[in-house]
Image (cartoon, rainbow, N blue to C red; front, side, top):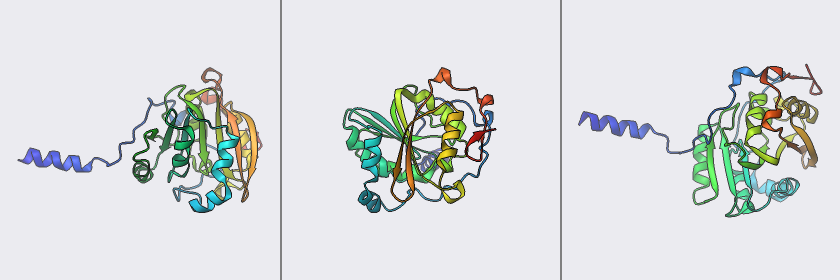
Length: 239
């Protein structure tokens, strides 16, 4: 009887959400330099009200600029409330996939609830320095209003690159502001991504002082070694 009670107690402690990493861990956080800038605190699962974002046409502008098409696999890194996830699902269609990745347990719980019934969506538990996505599995990645919250951007970008298929697109949507005010100046963003071997392929001004920057990830063998990566100074040059 005691054993049964213990088993029931353990079962009740198991999280309701089933999100798990999809790939083995990549390079550990400790081998990368820390960013030479503030890192904003994660304060909310969404940027602003969904109705307001829809009225501004945010998703459609981003999806068009990134050429997201039916049949593709798209990862939403830092998916938060799932605003992009539920709109990407019909966009890629039944032959496509959406990987809704996050690191915050409460957000993962909410994501699991919100995407229930969407057969082409998988919720993924990542790490702040590693999205834990399978190699060569993703056509496009979006990071929406969260880049400034990444505690180890060099590690995340380094570990993300092997998940990208050749020609894959990485789109970063953020406010043109300093990280302590929940934004990333474009020059700083370009410098940090270039430090890991990413190449900018597009830049699109968006409403309300935001922008979408699109990059191509380096081939895994073309990435700089972690100890060769240098943090950026003043958002323009690497140390």
